[in-house]
Structures are given as C-alpha cells and as structure tokens.
Image: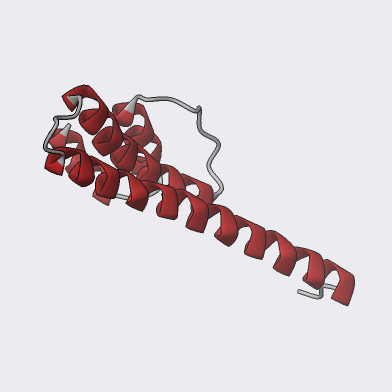
Length: 101
C-alpha cells in the first residue's frame, strides 16, 4: 500500500504522540505506589485512605495506558472492573486480573 511522504510523516507523528501519552500514564502510575510506600513510613502517621487511594490509582493507570496504546476509547473512571473489561476485549490477560479485584 502506497502512502505519500506527508501521510507517512503524519502517521509517525500520531504514533509518537500515542507513545508519549502511554509513557505519561505509566510514569504517573509508577509514582503512586512510591507515594503510598512513603506514606506508610511516616512516623507521625498518614491517612490510610490516602495510601489506599494512591495504590488504587496505580492499578487504574496501567490498564488505562494499555487502552491508550491500543486506541480504545474509555471513560475516565475509578472503576477498575470497567477498565479491565475494556482491556479484556483486546487481551486475554485482563480476565486473569478480574479475580484480584
């Protein structure tokens, strides 16, 4: 299939933008458990709700990065099951995580 140079440049730009967004989701997701771990080490105590929130954010951001990579539209939600269902339409590994919730 022929694609003129301008078309190819546009497709390359789109691919790079998608990968940049995926990387942003993964980096943000990787920051959340670090913050949760830090909260657990505080001697004055930290709200366990905040620690749990950041742990959940990590779990949500990684499937979201996968959906962005695959070009799947998804709602911005705190519903991990819903995100995993969308992932399951694209990959069998998501079904194995449903039990972990």
